[in-house]
Length: 248
Length: 346
Figure (cartoon, rainbow over the protein chains, first blue to last red):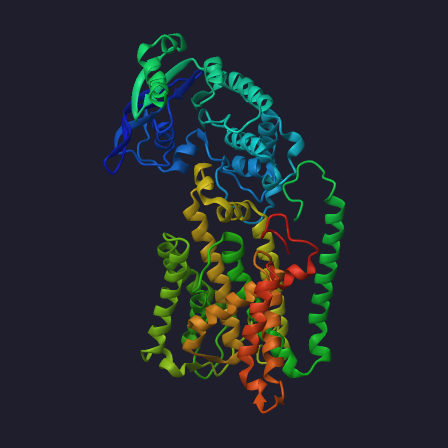
């Protein structure tokens, strides 16, 4: 579905992402892990079009989408969630998701018919809310929600846009244990008809859902492969353990 | 619209319904009062309220940008003045132009101007947006101020007001003070209803989303620039309507209509009345113009002619409102601050 070929992003002299190639296939969770500053979020920003690539190529279903704007990539079926909750605080949970789903209408240049008369976005919003388990909070403004609940809305909004590819940037960060379990289960369900790229620090969750893992360190791909292979990789262990040694 | 987007019923909805009914009743009462005004008040007040309603249209159009889309335009006078100038320049000198041709031309000119300026200024944001909108409107001001186009600093007169004749039938006569008043009142109500409708539409939801979090709107798949530009053009066209009506009322157009004072005072009306609502800016327009009149009429106290220094008092009043009423005058009428800060309320 989504493929990065030798993608790089430089900030001045710093290579935040350097020559990264990976592929996100339908029916697979591809997890990207690595220490802080490894370039995981930057990679997602490149794939979603939030940041332009310095070099390399991004393909969606074989089509070159390098350099497209975020809204164009989104409309091609790539949905993303943000590490730092990125929502509409004054609006209700329902309206956050409805507005997300509204983006799937051919155009919102409609000036007269009341927005709530359009059934499809409202139904998509309700579906997304029930998937993350927030139906009961539909009428509450985001500003009144807990951090964990906002994280759930963040994911529901992404789902409401009915993407085929999901780019999830630390979806579990800040969630309670119960909420995390629910989202992990949701990911296991979604993977059947989605291609999912998951950046996550919660290793238990990662090894539960991931079909493929890519380990990044300092902007480079250190290792990539099945969970078993990553678990047994000497280089990966050194990269993680190495930082521990330095602290001692 | 306090419970907008609320899929499931919430405990507060019946309270909201009551409040909504009260608000609608209050609006209808105001409308009734405005409708009978010409039958009970002197000509002076009819003219004053004509002016207030025109400024109300102007203020609502600016609030679409400031309060709803979050675009703080400090050059809104450009579109107000442009339509007025277009009317003055296309009107024959000693006979009446047709209302039905000049009105669309004037509004169209303002919309076109907003499209051109908007396409440039909307590439900036924040403080730069304020500066560039101001710069463009000042360019237009100096174009008319420093050249001989349309009478230069002296401006030009419209000796005969446009006629509303349709194939020889005259439905109303804009030379008649009451007729003009009712025409303006009808347009005011029309603009109010139009904006309410647009704000509740898919488009309205998008511009609200853009104000709150434009970045997220883009990542959700909205080409935000296009929506902001459309919003800018609608606001410019409606400001043009106000400018056109103002030119008709005074029969006179001068560069002051394009100047930053004009942009500033309409912005003050919006802020004074309450951003992010439609009644707020209309109320702000009325409050500011009535207050101006009242302050100018103040007597001499202890050797100081208060009336002459009315602007000082007006300034203090605005400072007080800004400090004490974060949601403007309209905030006084609402029991508590709206849940979403600024949006979707009548």
